[in-house]
Image 1 (spheres, rainbow, N blue to C red):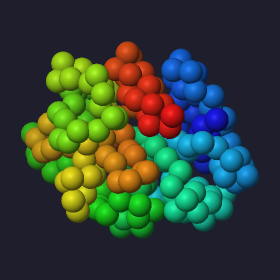
Image 2 (cartoon, rainbow, N blue to C red):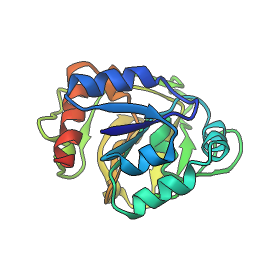
Image 3 (cartoon, rainbow, N blue to C red):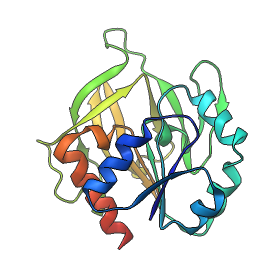
Length: 202
């Protein structure tokens, strides 16, 4: 059973459906007992970083997430959920994140870029990982974001996309995983990535 964190940020039904498509049982919840009993946790998210962190505090979920991370439970952050895994964001101010992966969330700065970064990009593998099994340079995933992760250690980046800079697409530090794109909106490639996540759990 995979707990999909419901903190009023994100399209949870699409994530639930995608998990079902790869044979994973998802439960949309903000019940800390369910988070504690789950095999893994997914932290989805769309919208503003500060609002998302405020909602995690409002629903008293941060201590539970922290405790499950310490226990070694896999956590997958999707889109904004990935950005929350880092130390801080500079989106409309400066806001503290969950600090599971060292680094910051910064805005695209090249004046010629179309912002938000929206659409399909291929992933360039930075290091070997079961997360990118059967994923190649011809495989595209769907991004929608105006800010991107700048990790302290680029070894935490499993795969990245090129958009004037190297945009971390998949990050992993121990049991903490993030996908900046939307696997649930990335067709067969997104489902393959979720299957790879499933294999990590087995």
